[in-house]
Length: 239
Image (cartoon, rainbow, N blue to C red; front, side):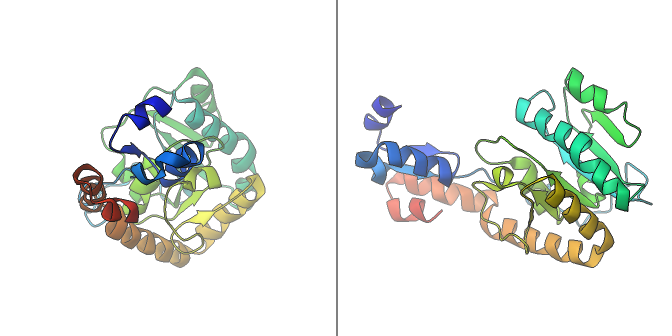
């Protein structure tokens, strides 16, 4: 990696924290290393169009989206289903956890044997699941890069409960634009609180949407990349 970075005019990593890590290892190359995160299609992930709910919305529904043979995602949903959801259901007996994504592993499929867990596999459109969720959850305990699932849920105007690992690299204000939970008890408490205060969940979701529109639309992301490609280091470094 050092050899490649030294031979390049610029090195672009997928997040600011990863760029900071590489700079710490290569301080002599710091001015040529940038973190430019993924973006999200705000027109596609738009909460405004009416979409039919894919599940019963009479109770609390918590939704996780992602490719389900990927180890960090697998670990996240197992942890949520087995350690967090039972605590949630003490306060919200009807709460259901929806695991939405392609290629569920054998361990993920076994979670579907739990009465209050639904494993969908690949779906034609994840947006109805996100839109009608009580909250989206990203209980990742190991993560790299930028969590697109978090950006997509934020773009859909949903409150997202995240671990620090899931939030890494995303500029969002905890408590206002996302809900940060550091352990199973905190995650369960946040989920119950959002289910019991839909106005608060809606307010966080609206703020999340505004954040994504301002900072994570592809126009903003490509502007930063243009800066790196064209040598405008000040523009690239800002984002």
